[in-house]
Amino acid sequence: MSHTKMLPGRRAFLRGLGASVALPGLSSMGVARAAAGARGVTASGAPLRMAYLCLPNGVIMNKWRPQGSGKDFVFNESMKSLEGFRSDLQILKGLEQANGWGGRDGAGDHARGNATFLTGSRPRKTSGSDIRLGISVDQMAANHLGRETRLPSLELSCDGVRKSGNCDSGYSCAYQYNISWRSATQPMTPESNPRLVFERLFGGGSRSERKESRDIRRAEKRSILDFVLEDARAMEKSLGRNDQQKLDEYMTGVREIEQQIEKAESLGPPPDPGVAAPENGIPRNYHEHIRIMFDMMILAFRSDQTRIASFLLAHDGSNRNFPTHGVREGHHGLSHHRGDRSKIEKISRIDTFYLEQLAYFLERMRSTKDVDGKSLLYNSMIVWGGGLSDGDQHTHNDLPIILAGHAGGKFRPGRHLDLNTDLPLNNLYLRMLEEVGAPAGRLGDSTGILTKV
Image 1 (cartoon, rainbow, N blue to C red):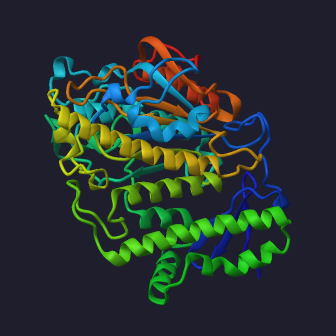
Image 2: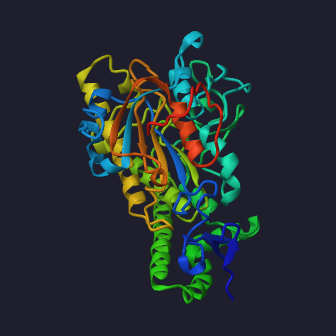
């Protein structure tokens, strides 16, 4: 007997013991499109997604920023991997998070860089429990759109969880390890363990049923898809050929991620990367960890389990090394280069590494068809950047910001856009909130909506 369920918004789930696999939009089941003009929906009826991707320690700007402006720009050394996405990107020059600067608070730019990135608010300088910041842009959107999806938002990280203690010059670790904030005093703790993210996306039923399902899967080496197979076979009979292919591709993607997690678990914990103790399920290689998290974000978007995500690739101040790119020294240590050419060259390799991971994500987003026949990338707004520009000087203006996606046709990508001023990054965020139907009068030190993008 089929247990396929339809939830509000005509979202379909396959169900089994401790399993709940959300499906992509299938026209045969009448879930192809939402009503045009609805909140958080593009003109063609597809959900509009937003993602915020945060990297640490600034960049080597003269190797990072493109040469030229407008449409006639040339990608610089660090950004070569993005050449194939020229028509999907806007590289923005002139954005600032002014509350990241020290002022009377003095040192602590890494903590402030992370804290201000999505909130635009000045963090209270404390290492105690009296933290205070501000709501972040993703949570502003979640407050308006969260009821439309199973998960109001998805928070990911490649770092461990830290919400207390002193991390940077008298600032609480809560500021440095969390970029998403539900309120001024409550960070949204991100998940770094792929297994736990997977179970959150695909587990279902009561707590005891989810535990029973996990125990059986581990003991018998079965896939979560085995628990919904009866449902899937029954449903497949009613699908057209295109939807059958779409379902098969989607289920294959779920299984591939599951296999990656199982492989990581079988190898045991990775080496300590200089952050909190790693857990089983975390891949040994950093780029594999980043990419599996990207893959799960895409599955969550594709099945409309959430439309809002944030991903802290590494906290500001991170001291990881990058052996895949010939960098054995720690990132944070190198970022204080004092003009040393050797250190600058190594940091540019790190910048290249991070942009290669972005290229991977963009390619997966662009190659995934959405419910309206366009790509997930076309129907998304993706911010890539961080709260520091120059890691040596600890500057918070001219931030390295890339805006990817077309916002369902509302953005004008394919440009290096020079704003010719220090404009609050939060003005861009207000524009994004407006596009998803969650308008806000103010965010941090915003001065208005950025209309130029």
